[in-house]
Image (cartoon, rainbow, N blue to C red; front, top):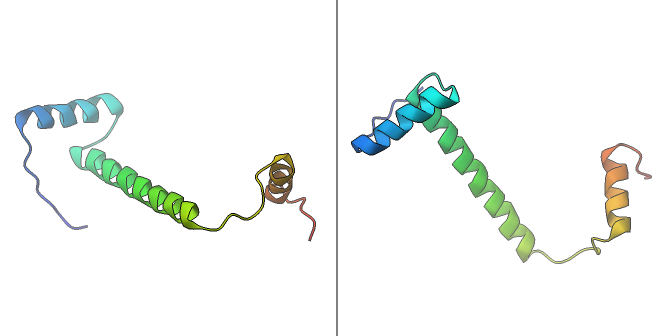
Length: 79
């Protein structure tokens, strides 16, 4: 695992320490890794949303669409 050293003002260091203590993280590194993972997830979701906005519409998202989707997810889809 690579190492990265960061400098924080005292107020941010105190905040990180509070989060580690109060939220069950073992170390400040675990807390920072979790923040980075969440940011990666947000960026991925944003990219997917933007991709969806830029795509051509397919079928209407009406009751029939969601019924077919539920059937497909539960393994009861035809064809």
